[in-house]
Length: 346
Ligand code: TXA
Ligand code: MG
Image (cartoon, rainbow, N blue to C red; front, side):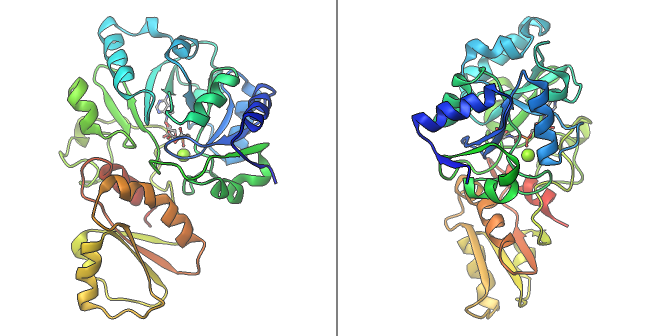
């Protein structure tokens, strides 16, 4: 099999594959990425084919040093004020789970950005990701390493099951730390916009640079507690409703709603915290074989985020018929959890 543990040899081999136009799945601190040389249009085309991803959904370009930023972005097209904001963001959140939409450099082929004049750039903090990017051309386009529309991989094994035969190599660096994707923000417009909630909480970004507008979503109070969505019509081209979906039907419920669910055979119950599970158990008498999961026993959103996709993969590979999942409290990574649950739900 083409899964390799991370080592000097496997990294060298992986970088060579990338330089030659091949595809390598690699760990980042968020989820596993499916890497291709960001300057090579043929390699980029293969990424879309292998994932079954629509061509209108642009890729994130990963770099491994601030010095290489200008090789992928055209910073001269940003106003001085925006450049200042960019460097504030970069100093505070890079390397890390934040992708910033910037004017793209002409060296990045249009296929990478779905024809847009902007590119989402990310400098990941994962050591393996950084080494791989540095050893290759310095710019690696990488969507999450899953077939389009399914749950993102947090382990090499998830990549093997989803894409194994179609790609050239999988670098196994164990489970990813954060467990869901990076936050995507767009700083190219008049106002700074959140395009996808993710590993860097919106409120943390706002404490540094001021108001960040929410994307337009349906009536997602959990995602957008301040109801700012009306202010912002734009969203990421790839943010489709039916994204991150397990094969098993999933119903996302509030705390009150899940506590009110009567136990049914064949259903899995995915609680946000131990306290809610205990409240539910007071009125229910499920058999020992019941599938009952808790994302964070003590109710920590960061811990819950790191278990979300992992647990959905596990449930998807079992024989259960439906999943009842509880929303997280809408703060910090809870907002990203709720976004993914909404998109995973039927
Ligand atoms: O954590 C992550 O971001 C992972 C790891 C591998 O880095 N990558 C990831 O990539 O989640 P992907 O392709 O699954 O999601 C990329 C998101 C999509 O929603 C896409 O629409 C948005 O970023 N995006 C990319 N370029 C964009 C652009 N120029 N303008 C607006 N949105 C963009
Ligand atoms: Mg994805």
